[in-house]
Length: 60
Image (cartoon, rainbow, N blue to C red):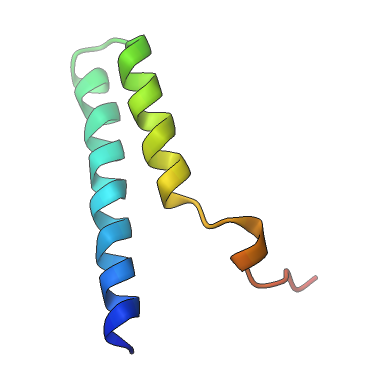
């Protein structure tokens, strides 16, 4: 595996952990995400998701 790919995977893992931590805090406090947390979560999710043009085609 190339060094760049490992770096990208590590970065994605960090972003996923940050997003999960946001939701875990809300769950442990038995509450919904605040508006600020929702905005942060959405921003993280946008950085995590791969744009459609870079996704491999689906096999049906």
